[in-house]
Image 1: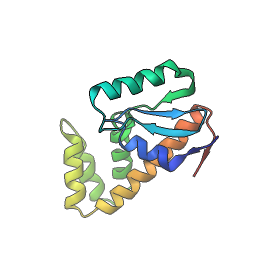
Image 2: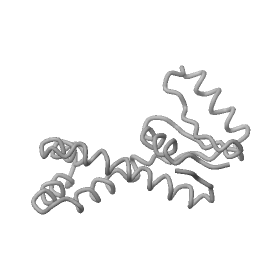
Image 3: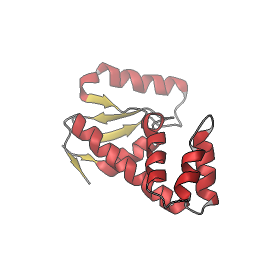
Image 4: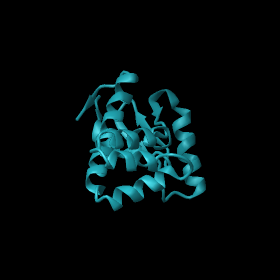
Length: 136
């Protein structure tokens, strides 16, 4: 059983709004569908909890590490841009200001590539920390 790192990274992209699990027996990444009504979602969660030793819940990676990814992007930017991105990341509303600066500086594609690579690396780290085999 090997976890597909790209599927895991994709699940992490939604981890702030949708609960995810790894089915340890099948090696599959499972995201709670967002089109479930409350009763269906509850039934799904209870089904997983009844067999909890076969499932590993995914952390809310966006809330935990998004700022770290933004700082990393800023630190790797060229001089001048680096300062503007760092400044955007201070205080309340930092993520929003950072995204605005990224658009304003025409760095959207570079940011998206960096963010996806960071999520993939986070998926790799998650697998290694939890002793899960993975494939890229």
